[in-house]
Amino acid sequence: MSSSFLFSPKEVSLSALYKINLQQLNTPENYKFFRHIQRGIEKEGLRITPLAAIAQTKHFPTLGAPLTHSYITTDYSEALLEFITPVSTDIDDSIQLLQQLHQFTQTNIGDEYIWPTSMPCKLAGNNSIPIAQYGDSNLGQIKSIYRQGLSHRYGRIMQSIAGIHYNFSMPDDFWPHYQKLCRNHDDLSTYKSARYLGMIRNIQRNSWLLSYLFGASPVLDASFIENSQAQQLETISDNTLGLPFSTSLRMSDLGYQSKAQSSINISYNSLDEYLEDMTAAMQQSFPDYEKIECKIEGKYQQLNSNILQIENEHYSDVRPKRVLQSGEKPLAALQEKGIEYVELRLLDINPFLPVGIDELQVRFLDSFLLYCLLTESAGISPQELTTIKQNQQNVVLKGRDPTLQLNISNEQIPFIQAATQLLNAIQPISTLLDQSQQRPTQSHQYNDVKSYQHAHLTQLDKVLNSDLTPSGQIMSVINSGISFTGVMLNIAKENAIKWQKKPLSEATITQFNLLATESIQKQHQLEASKQAPLDIFLQSY
Image 1 (cartoon, helix red, strand yellow):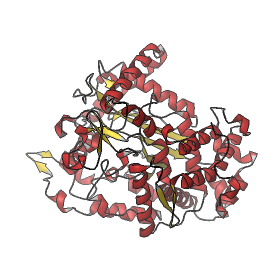
Image 2: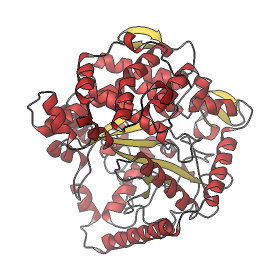
Image 3: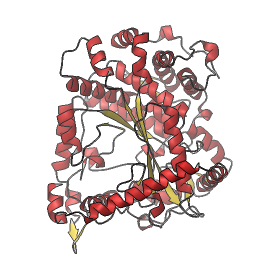
Image 4: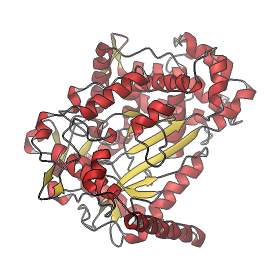
């Protein structure tokens, strides 16, 4: 592993605010804040048959009720599992729980497997993807109707893509302390929201780096796209299409796309602007969606004909969020209480990692996100937004192309220069985090796999050698002549064998069985409770 920078840190121009923040926060009395960073991980994964087709079976009762289970639920499809870790300040605990959830699930889905990557397995058209079901309660029916609406609007194939969401927040006691350091006198909630929105804007500006470092979808199975779309790609191997230098087709126009949403611009320049834009999108009817009857023969086809049925329909790389109390609406909660955490949504599943993400990646994400929080963040103009989107698309389509250039501060510069300069700017955060963890930061300690410096330098090595990226590793295997589906099915089976060889403890199995039983009981109680007629409930919803 490299232990030096391509460019000297002294040559990197650090912003004035960033320098001040580093100086003020890099003291022993402030280290406690960085030891208590709060994280949560949401990881999706398709259930597949032994022949690599999407599973047609219902969600297994032994896993619990997806409507009410805290850890194991479903996303769009009945076959699209979603594992959720609770908020934790311990990285190892979060990864370990993800591992246990995968192991428990694998032992409870018969001869099926968990697909280990973001782009889906072999598909047999829209109807081969079963929409998730959540029971007969009003809330359960609303969730299924919403997904039915997505089916009519975008097609089910698009919804079969899986990913990882990384939730990040600083501890509550950090904010009044940091506000005081910054000599700000706003209401604390207002200040906290403003800083998180600044962080989000910087994530948008720099998200191309994450797509390069962690993009893991350079190819896909030919069944995913129509013939007209296939012209945009090259045949890589049997039934496998892709682009030679792509990093993340999941994040390209072939992945999540929406004609309606491309017509709106959600601003993150202030909380008021964000709420106003989101509210408008949820209230503005869209002509194409008006053609979809909301109700046919007593069955709802969508929640409404607006650009967004609900907040979650907005496809974005990052979202401002807060934990909702019973009955709360996301936008209303943000308006009343402010932003509580940030959800990073652009991460692909790394098929070479047992649960798609590992401690090393989490440590770098912490450094990256803190850099985005602690450096200046002016509002994003329409012109800059265009540049941001161009940089992002250039990297997802040809990020490993050695001739690629990015537009940085209105100047075209080689990708490797842009990436190393950004990594060098982030590096002091990695040092700060290691110091807060009381880990050595000298160069000879960079091989400490638990250190943030090790995580940081691992990413620098990827910039210097694109073959080390997940997308580069995938292309290396695919270029040997094996199909995308064949490679991923082998990995899915290997994962299952590994998990079987290292079974869960009886105590863990008992705990998960209890959670499953309790979730089913909660759903039954919800369905047995007195509810308004669905039509009336939907109007208020």
